[in-house]
Amino acid sequence: MTSDTGPLLSGRTALVTGAASGIGAAMARRLAADGARVYAVDLSADAVKALAAEVDGIEAVPCDLTDLDAVDALPAEVDVLVNNAGRQHVSPIEDFDPELFHQILTIMLEAPFRLIRRVLPHMYERGWGRIVNVSSAHGLRASPYKSAYVAAKHGLEGLSKVTALEGAAHGVTSNCVNPAYVRTPLVEKQIADQARTHGIGEDEVVEKIMLTPVAVKRLIEPDEVAEFASVLWGPASASVTGVSLVQDGGWTAH
Image (cartoon, rainbow, N blue to C red; front, side):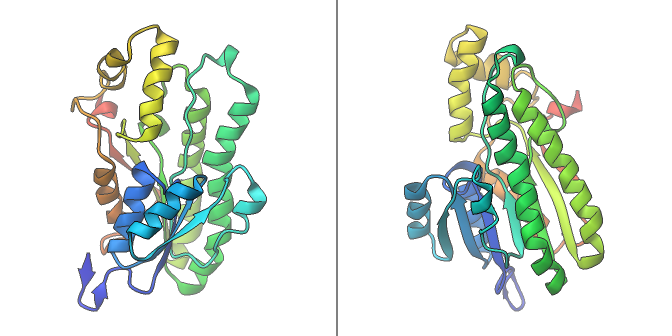
């Protein structure tokens, strides 16, 4: 996207977590195309370095988001923050490993809090900032066997709204995007987990579990999510804050 003065985000800096693949990589590419200098943060150093080598304007920043000291050392001079990194685990609550529950909440809720806390002073100083939290239809609804993921996404929704209220006077917006199932490595791994948990074949998981609640019977592509999210840093974004932009194929229409 361009404006009369050049690329929309020329002179701006963005940071995207979980940027090596899927939604995060699509977000990083879109932000770079819009003129931002992008810090692409991911656990996989090789994968995120490959993305940076492929796309001008992207800098690879390997980081384990469970290491909160490392999170607190990530770049702070950020104008657009995309909290995208996530992990899924499918298990009944009584069998859910408490350490894994803690790890998922750390990656998907505490790390976003730490990053928001870190970048807000820069955004406040400049009088402009955009925070995009990649939530999910599971930020608005629940499914069995996903206690950590659903809890984290519901928490992210609340964090996003509080940030929106605090940031409004400083020109900072905070919003969630809420896709249904997206064709990403996380979802591909989940297909196998769901098959094992429900005792059905992997070919049945997409049709009988993932697409049952949606009216549009297809997986969403990562580039669609990035295009949708770009509204939140675009020209119409100034008064869009504290909301959840739903891209769920009709899931929550029920």
